Image 1 (cartoon, rainbow, N blue to C red):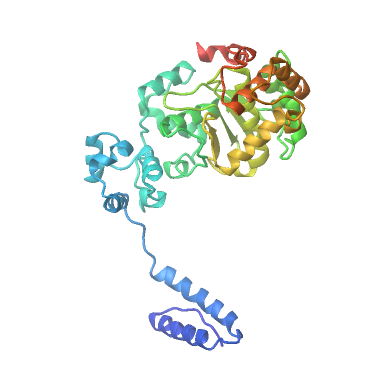
Image 2: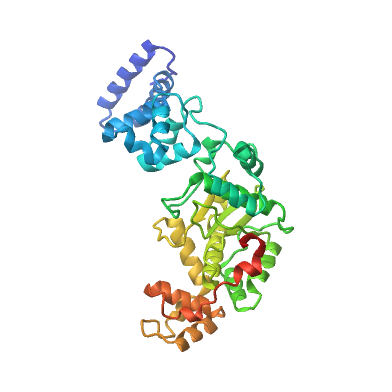
Length: 393
């Protein structure tokens, strides 16, 4: 049969009758192609003709409240004070970026509904807490509440719009207590720090092989390894920056891409321990090695609180590659790797892997969930002074 485009209600009704007849007479399967084509034509017409606009942000919130029998007071953890909830529910105040993220994460309201047809959010100013602004000033960024949005735009470029940033790739490896605006400000400041000292070499995707990562891990055995690794990465086209956590953020590190194709690894030195530094560094480099194409998408990033166990596939992949880079699993079979391990076993493991002893001791502690044994073998409180002393005064 000849299938034509549908341009009117009459043609739509006729096409539905034709489809019903085709299905009834398709016992031998000879009309399956006609059924598939006519179905596609019908769907295209119906999607265009009967498209349903997403509900307004306020209607989406009210619908979820009815579904879950929530009171306005139940919204306070997501929207703030009782007065703020009242303003939003009465339509006197639009949703901020923080509100959109909180409602999506906490109540599973789709971003499309919260953003709404006309935007549905307050583009500016961002509501940044005073402690965050104070800490930014301490590390060299004089940001005021009134120009916080401009600060973010300077870092991200013109794409720094709440609708886009709300969809930024993020794994589940961030604390539920995270202040999402503080996290955004941390990312912006990190990108600006990196923009002032981008590596001269061009990154070659695929160059972070398992062998390359093992060589990076073995720099840990050198006295100035943490300093040398930054130069080593720069020569490979990878930027590395140190940026302390901001109040309301709980991070060890992050991986992202800036300027279109420059991989960026950021470390907070939240735990000033040699083992944590190297595992975080190798974890973020593993994200670059495994997920570079994903990170090249606008605004994408991995934020990692490594105190949190994650079931995210990408996080587990990065964990595994980082562990193998630091201490190959084959070496664990050659020593006593149990609750009865001795200092000699830890030393033998670190020497076999060619890494700092702190890494072997830290690996044992995490494996056995015992952070007292071998604690004296872990070097502490040296990295901040070596890598960014002015930022931690």
